[in-house]
Image (cartoon, rainbow, N blue to C red):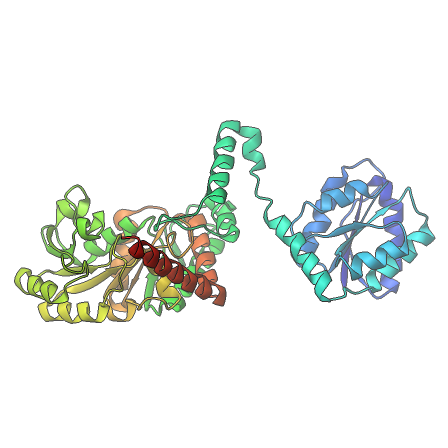
Length: 450
């Protein structure tokens, strides 16, 4: 077992005494300082020891200062640390057995060497009692830790923005989220998006960057790509689009020329701005032929859609919508596209989470291109993605970069990777199934009120 020791100047002598003592107990001992009796700041050594334990570089840690209080307080600021200040063997034993303490704090001014040896020996030999009540209480401590999201630096630097953030957190906590295009991202997603990767420029793709120092962001992007492939059964994935609109633009520019015909759903019938609205680039650069829903049942009339396609001969048919609460028959659309020699693109921005969980048919196997966003039903960061057949991979990648974007947002791509990881878990499937049940119940109640 590896154990890391740290102290300030007042705990230095006791630390030096405990090192050979722990080695005699069979421990692999790491000394994290301090290195003498010159005055030092105890938080520096508390952080070093606690971080090593938190990150799995050591199994346990011991911290020593005059009273042990400062060390224990500082260590407990580090995620996943449960530091216990122990003044006798009973406290040492119960801190391990009941609280699963992974850092021991000692007060060199409060105990003698013999007492310290007894406390340390009891502490390292005791094991956590993995019974229900102790595990439940440890979990609740971890939940308290996960709630500690107060933006401390913003509070110090910009009180006005801090007030805005706090007010928005309260608004989200106190209200039901009924906007279909919004979800609540996990803390893991938000931590990744707010990480040091925001500092990194990384034009290009993994292994083919225009900047040095990209080994870590390459790994993050590869993870995002591999997980998205697994999640949606895709041959090729590009996770760099900053938004769904840019993902759609990249697809259009990869297979179309200005003036080519796109067939897509009307905005008034549930489509999206990028599906041909005159005020959008799609309506300005391409010839748009629209299809809609039947006035009888407000569902897509596939026979009418096929008739329009046969007449218009579009080069690209776009499926998907922003406001169409019905399952779309992608296989039927594939046949219509094949009949007129058109590419088929599905914009699954709103249903990506449902598709990932198996609650909606997957358009990827039958489509040439699928675009989407990661921040709607996927519950990830705000951003876009493109999934396509391998034969289109080179053209798609070239249109994203250098075609319409420069440097990718690597902090967002890391958050996308986390999002895809979470979406691969059984808990995400249960969540999406409940979303469907909630929507069905809401529709049932509203219909009964008519």
